Amino acid sequence: MSVILKDLNDYIAPSQACIKPVEVKKTSTDNNNVIKIDNSGEYYEVSQEGVETKLQPASITLEDCLACSGCITSAESVLITMQSQEELYNILRNNKQAIIDGKSEKIIVVSIAPQSRASITKKFGLTPLKVAKRLTYFFKSLGVHYVFDTSFSQDFSLLESAHEFVERYRKFQEVQENHGTSSESRLTKNNRIKRENTSSEDATQHKRSSDICLPILASSCPGWICYAEKTHGFVLPYISKTKSPQQIMGSIVKDYLASKLGVKPNNIYHVGVMMCYDKKLEASRLDFFSEEYQTRDVDCVLTTGEIVKMFEEQNFNINESPEMPLDSFVKTNQEGQLLRSSGSASGGFLEFILEYSARELFGITGIDVEKEHGIVVKTGRNKDFKEISLEADGKPLLKFASAYGFRNIQNLVRKIKSGNSPYHYIEVMACPSGCINGGGQLKPNESLSIKDWINEVNHTYRSIDSLSPEKNETVLNLYSEWLGGKDSPKCKTMLRTQYHAIETLTNPLAVKW
Image (cartoon, rainbow, N blue to C red):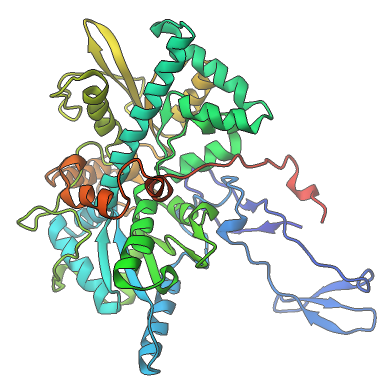
């Protein structure tokens, strides 16, 4: 039995069938029962004695999803019960009732992605700071307790990604030098070796080899992760184990903040405001679920468009809204102005990791990728693929790339599979133009083309001054206070994750229960 999801408008490719089989529990006495459909479309099971039992509709949650590209990236109308503004409204109503009944309420935290803020800023013609303060007012007027900014957790993700790259690069170099491999052939030969290992059934070898796989592939895009897990299991050892900014903020909220407030993680309800529908699927991964407290690191994800829909539902005019001071976990300077990390609107992973690695591995300082200072940049056949190299005496020391959109991703995967990838690190994003063009972002008016709209939202994102994660004192202090240092076991638990190859069903409709 399969479930058909109708009227979907998939962001990547149109599809209307959800292939997840649904179990129908049978009893020893229902072999000759029949199914009846009444005039209203309701289903009833009719026994041999004529007794009718109403059947409940199947419930498909994100945990059931096989990442088949049939619905998880829908930009319009997939109804996900646990990932909607209605669920947030329910929590808010429950809190109000709890206060009336004299019971304890859940602490509600909202974390907003800077890409979502940039989209709203451009749509309503405001400044990023005004939008941040007015969003804080909006959510707190509904009953939310804290409003944070994932630029803060993005700094954690950038630092940890850079630490991971340097660790893996050094292990990679050590292994290759022990084998006497020349620097020119190390990457391509290593790719062929690792592909052979990942096709083996030896799980121990698979796990060991992941520590020395190059190139490292960025992991912050859940659409890309879904694609890799479902279709290219051999590529998983190459993917960075560092959590995305969304999920690191989940760790901060459910572990650090909960400890500071003296509450259990399941007494906090954490909402992410994101640029992408696939972030809902990421939040629902079992890797980010606490069995002990029966709670997720991020309980609910709402897209930028869903937040604007909430404006309409609440008769909220952001252009005339009061403002509220920003909360603590927001990246600002001493004057209270918003800050961002340098680099692209997809998080700046390539830029920061290259600059950090140039210094840590080769003692080269003064590199500025954003200004193209001290590097060599080559654009591919399309604007969504770039190569960035760090060179010395005309020879490349590090070779990075950015690959946005599935056309570029497929070419990239083929190169890795054939052992012909020359790169050390690749920033991978499923959406063309990257996160600023996520499926959950606001759309332009008819007078403006999509291309021009993306450029303007990107300009809005970059209009904020940047600050290196290495200069974010709050983040650096939390590395010590909360995590016990960058090499501690807790640091690895809170900031890193793992990936799982998903078994493909060649004919899912033929599955028997």
